[in-house]
Each structure stands twice: as structure tokens, then as C-alpha cells.
Amino acid sequence: MKKVRIAIVGCGCISGIYLKNLTTVFSDTVEVAAVCDLIPERALEAQKQYNIPKAVFTDEEIMNDPEIEMVLNLTTPDQHKFVNMMALKAGKHAYCEKPLACTRTDGEEQVNYAKEHGLLLGGAPDTYLGGGIQTCRKLIDDGWIGTPVAASASMLCRGHESWHPDPEFYYKPGAGPMFDMGPYYLTALVNLLGRVKSVSGSARITFPQRVITSEKKYGQVIDVEVPTHIAGILNFESGAIGTLVTSFDTYNDIQAAFTVYGSRGTLRVPDPNTFGGPVRILLPGSREWKDVPVVYGYTENSRGLGVKDFCKCIREGGIPRSSCEQTFHVLDLMCAFHEASDAGRVVELASPYTRKPALPLE
Image (tube, rainbow, N blue to C red):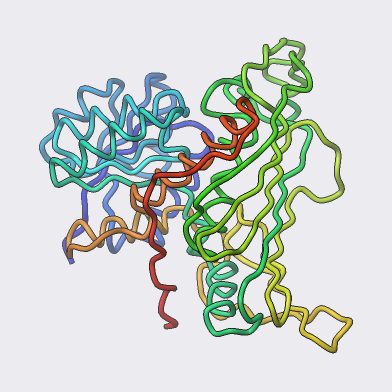
């Protein structure tokens, strides 16, 4: 298969693992032909470290390059729609970091344009393609826990201002714990249990301001613009009921918890922000959780796995697993949680979603 020539726009913190994997593990499918960042030093450093042919400093130069077939958009959430639409209007496929957009309207505009012009659009997270959650998917599909009845998941931490060098955007529209971490949990949930038909929820801004304690911007004050504690209920088309809590307001001994309850057993799902295990199952008649061997590959940090699948579909046809149908359904869910809280009612979802088959065992 001829490699797909891509450009990476945005050379911030998350770009390192993408560059590492796309230039090594997934280089049979992907060729990183250019990197772009508005801060020239970032683009030049990425070019040097990963031996990329070209470093540029404006989006326009990427969009005008006829050899670039796809844009990997690693900008901040408030720029996702802008960069994705630039790429699509330049006739290029677009794959972006989560979320697809900051609003449902901005997501719909991208999805409609891509479909009308025969272009592929999709995005992160791709952690659900890792060995841990794919093993859970196989266990559920093979009936190990019977019919899924319910699921509970939580992401509990005290915020990112203590460690992230530039934490301001985590408290602006398009971020907060739901838009920042929620995509990992929601993407895993819909892959395991299917489409969500309605949600309800409550959300609040607990602390209107945050003080940065990481070294680069120590002492600076952040005004919080988005809810930082969200509790939601998901009603799946299958009949299963899910609960999800995402928080930047809490102290807890573990950040991630994820459990699926079935009619014949219970499954503990690994942290959906990771690609690996552990996977544990509790079956009737037993009081002890049993570890389940992870039977799929990609258990290390394999960000870019979704890009590989996306590029394969560019060459061979088909719908990527991390398609815009999936990323938009997740965006629809996140928006609906906030709307449900504001209106004090159940919000029905209109976005379609059909689960892709589990990955084949190699």
C-alpha cells in the first residue's frame, strides 16, 4: 500500500507520542511529510527530532501543498473546527485530537461538509482500539457476562494546573473534564454498549478561579469558564443504563474507574485513557475477581493507531473506525450532558451511531 502523506498541525505536548509512533510503529502506512506550528521553535524542534522533511509556520502553507493528503490536527480544542474546515476546503482528509469541536453546530458543519465532498473526517481518541478495551469488547460480544445491564465510569482528579505547562485551555470552552477526558470514557462506552439515545445530568463550576502551580506559569490565576464537575446518566438503545462522572474538583486515590455489569457477570474495564490492561471479570459463584489475559496487541501508548486505520481507509476505501459518526456522537453526548443540567431535563440524541465490529484477532 502506498503511504498516505500527512501533515501535523500543532506541535504541543501531545504531538510527541504521535510523531514517535507515526514515524516508527505505523510508518508502513503513514508518511509524516510536514509539521506546522505558529511557534516556529516547536515546528523546527519536531522536524529535527523526528527527521520530518518540512517544517512550516502557517496553516495556509500546509493547505496549499498538493502533496499533503491528510491533516492531523493537534491544535487546542477551540481551533479544531477552524483547522479541520481549512483542510476539508483544501480537499484534504482531516483527523483531529478530541473533541471534534466545541459545539454541536460546529461539529455538524464539519460532518456535513466532509460527506458532501467525499472526504474522510474523524479523530481521537483511539485508545479503545488498544488491547485492553478490545479484549473487553470480545468478552462482551462472546457472552462472558451475559447481556449488559449497566455501566459505571468515573474520572476524578483535582485538575491539571499542578503539572501541565499551559493549563489555561483546560478551563475554557471545549475543555473542562467532560470535553477533555469524557471522550475517552464515552468512546469506550459506545464501543462496548452501542448508541446512546438520551442523557440527563448535573454540572457545576465549583471553583471560579484556579491558581497555576506548575513551574512555567507558577502563580498565574485562571478564570474557569466551563463546568468542572459533571455527573450524567446515559440511556443506551440496548436498554443498558450508564453513569459517568468527570471531575477536576476532587481528590481520589485512583483517577479512572470503569465497570460493565451484565446478567451473568461483571467486567472491570481498564483506564480508557490507556491502551492496555488490566482486565478483570467477576462471575456468579465467585467472590474473587479473575484477571483475563489481554488477547490483542497495542497495549503500550499507541496513539496514532486510529490514524493508521484512517489512512488505510483513504487508500482502500471503507469507513474508518474513528470516523466522524463516532466523534460526532461523542460530541453530541457531551453537549447533551451540559444542556440537560442547564434545562433540568432528559435530552434526546439525534446523532446516528453504529458500532464497528471488534478488531480481528491476529
